[in-house]
Image 1 (cartoon, rainbow, N blue to C red):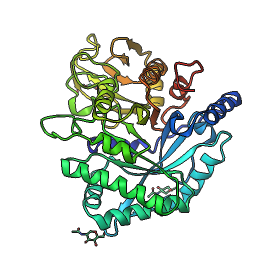
Image 2 (image 1 turned 90 degrees about the horizontal axis):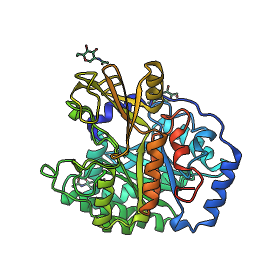
Image 3 (image 1 turned 45 degrees about the horizontal axis):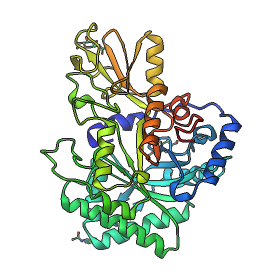
Image 4 (image 1 turned 180 degrees about the vertical axis):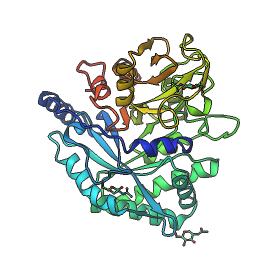
Length: 391
Ligand SMILES: *[C@@H]1O[C@H](CO)[C@@H](O)[C@H](O)[C@H]1NC(C)=O
Ligand SMILES: *[C@@H]1O[C@H](CO)[C@@H](O)[C@H](O)[C@H]1NC(C)=O
Ligand SMILES: *[C@@H]1O[C@H](CO)[C@@H](O)[C@H](O)[C@H]1NC(C)=O
């Protein structure tokens, strides 16, 4: 979700598939496990709900049935006032969103997510966070909106602070949100969506030698959502790449590498939530006979900027009788048919990732985004019964 990919995401939000009803026994088990865990360590199984273009419809009961937390993605700020500025659709959708989450058979926490991948959102955050009175106005407005709509938390999606100064402003913004929430007497969850690695927010250590102040962030935030995806894509499409692979012995571009940087930078495992994408990244193979990870590519394949939702990937695979490969070493799934090659997550890789996250003590996982996974195969994979995965 960085600015290079915003076009793709701004098209993806028009895509929505309905969900099928989920079994009641599952919901009962979820309720039980939430009730029996202390709130500070309760598992997080979150999903972002893209409200960009069809904001007036709330997430379905079925979409919520495998989640503990749902994010309204996104609201923006008015740069003139530094305040959260709801669109007409936001004002209509937020009450429906909160009612759907809270009214669910196993109630789901509803969180307001501010910002997103756009360059405008990033620039607004940079200006507001640098200015104490703007920070205060922003925090007061975010807490007020959360109060007005009965939301349970606020999420900051600033992609990404670009300098040591901006990183320190970023922490100041969280402190101010925490202070405002306390002053308003509201017990709000505070979270942030962050780059996959704590140490190279531009994905090039040389260009952006800036690290997240992870320990300071941990003091203010309930957890961070680590965007452990978009590790490869249309910007490096001369060869195929696993965009959300768990491991990569050859490079730093893997989910496990990124998570390790967060841990060593001082973010406690119980405040780390691993992102799992519900979309694929496509390539056009130079030679259809050469179809491994790292095979030469001419550029991206189907989809805007080479992005397809998981539902579209599954449809493509079926229509084209694609070969699906599970790379055991990388824990990465890909498929190919003819010249088209697609990196994505399926039930196999999502299960392995949820096991890994659980194994290293992470708080849970989040999905970008609800609605991209028609049959909720990924959500189910992460919540399989059994002690090794989030239940
Ligand atoms: C507001 O919602 C309506 C109905 O869902 C939709 O047609 C319209 O495009 C939305 N407008 C914006 C600015 O998102
Ligand atoms: C700081 O923010 C306040 C409130 O939004 C604004 O009035 C003021 O002009 C800003 N100062 C600077 C230097 O940008
Ligand atoms: C792949 O690229 C070639 C050459 O540009 C083009 O002719 C072909 O249609 C592309 N195939 C796909 C599946 O995008």
